[in-house]
Image 1 (cartoon, rainbow, N blue to C red):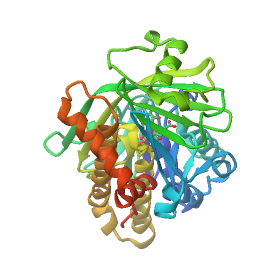
Image 2: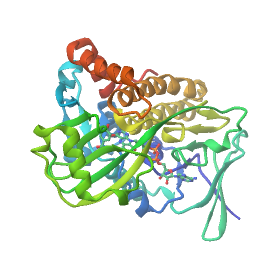
Image 3: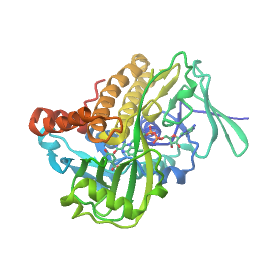
Image 4: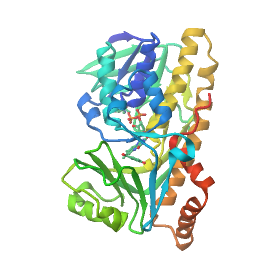
Length: 394
Ligand code: FAD
Ligand code: PHB
């Protein structure tokens, strides 16, 4: 068996793990990252597209914002369409802030390249990754690579390995409480090399189901439609997708839609999930490893970034000032914000999707939510405040 040592061992090379590693490096703290996937697989995943300005600031602070500012698209607002009625949420006017439309894929590619350039060890394609002895003051991460077992000894383990990862499993079931809601539908997403249908995002609720028009650049668009969980991508030819999207967004938007061959097509289930606590011994969970939100509020990546900012601050206090108060309060501080963001994502999802179990009453409630937002600046501002990101209270 081979042994390695580092200060913080990070499980998962997604945005959470990579950003944490970058921030620690900037402060002179060492880390090793272990991921079960290959670099190619990680860099090919198409995920989030909207960054809160707090996330933009965090990436700038970490020194990884150059490409984001060059290629990202700052947005001042977005449209809500409800049964063909359109209402623009002027996020900038309501909150004074913008959001940045920028692909998680590009962010991940840049973070991996930067970390490797700076000499960070990222172990890709590791098998049987497992945090062990996390209750002790010498926790380890064990994995196998090309038939050889390796143990990385460290001060702390950061579990940044997403919802299906191994880190959360290392917390005994007598300690871990989980809260979950599984939605009875998924999102079918299509990426296409065509200019977006509008300058801003469009969230549409229609009796045939939810639809979202988003983008990655001026020439690349990302679209989603709500679909049954039993559907597979094979059920959806490009033509069927475009026809369905056109019906759901209404004639005005559909008339401007530039369609084409899809360059990526995938189905994602929708889930709300929270694990408590986010710390066990010297293991700290962050990002999707600890919580999942349905993508309707564009919050998952942003929540992952805010966890990392809190964890980073706590680790800095430990290493630079021998102060463990922040580490002790990590779970409590994160969860307070997590639940507010869970609420917003659940609210947006409930308002905008078709639920098979909803009767006439719930459908009228959905319409009333929309009408309330249209009719009340206060309601619109509340929505906008959540969309641009709640303040990070540390
Ligand atoms: P992940 O990105 O899941 O990374 C975890 C890493 O851990 C992966 O590299 C994985 O290979 C690795 N791993 C897994 N298991 C193991 C193991 N056992 N051992 C070692 N490594 C392991 N969020 C937003 O903020 N805005 C949006 O607009 C948005 N849109 C979305 C649209 C869709 C369709 C989806 C699916 C998600 C969207 N999200 C959005 C959510 C966002 O993508 C996630 O919240 C984000 O990826 C979380 O980052 P993470 O680093 O915590 O986890
Ligand atoms: C995306 O562009 O992938 C995207 C944008 C907004 C969301 C979810 C996903 O709410």
